[in-house]
Image (cartoon, rainbow, N blue to C red; front, side, top):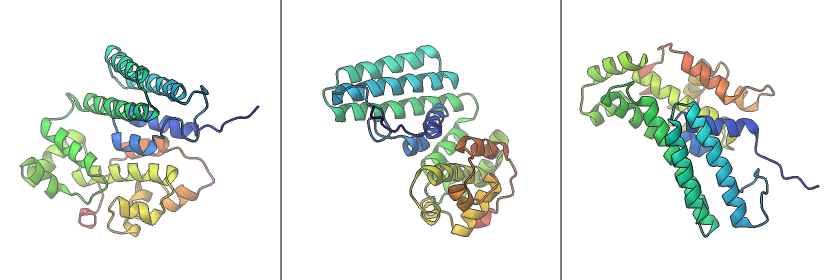
Length: 249
């Protein structure tokens, strides 16, 4: 019997976890087009095959999101909506677009659920801005200007509500993205450092080692297995606010 190699289990779980936590940028990095390499063949008909895979994908996403706090009625309502859209789709390209829309919709819904009632509107906007600029060189001055408030006020408010200073939060989001890129992309360490707008590769190595407990090279080339989820859990726990803000800014 001919067997089609399937995509790695840990990458698949990391993708669903990123949707569950509302991390759309990470979900985009981890997602693979339906019926690309690593997907099994569920039907000899290409259109039917991709529709079947979309149903599997939305079923998994729905369950992860319910576990993450989405009301089951909302989650199943979205699921039914996207399955119905796929059912009447007339081309493979149309199903791909529905799949991409589905990922974005669930991510945005989970992101709103995570922040709803937890942070003030200003901090929600600040976090949203950071999320959308993880690949840019962004600092507290730029965020304060975007929000129309003073830097000292933003600094105090952000620390009070999140338990972290702004620069620390920005660095953690960058390291979070770096972990996924190191494990699942073909980019070199230098390319990842530049892509995430670190001031230098040496600084990238310094902060990565601080949070991950090993260097980017050790993580990328290590013969041991450390899942992205395990390292991210350590990052979330680590609230040591000793980042050199001048070096970051």
